[in-house]
Length: 74
Image (cartoon, rainbow, N blue to C red; front, side, top):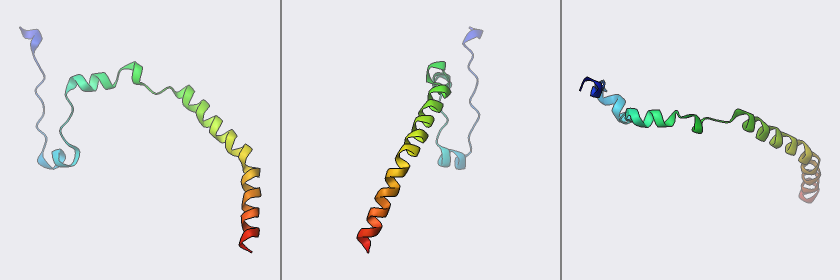
């Protein structure tokens, strides 16, 4: 029965509980750190590269639109 020992939770002061809420149970924190939910850095970098390249392709179009809008204001 010694295997069923649980680590007692440390008491949280009232201010910390008010500001940050109760701490999640141990089982939930283990689930959150599972490898399936880790961030895919390679995919993230590819997405950022796609956004940056799209921005550079649209830059001349935005300049043309802004000059057109400026001419309409006059």
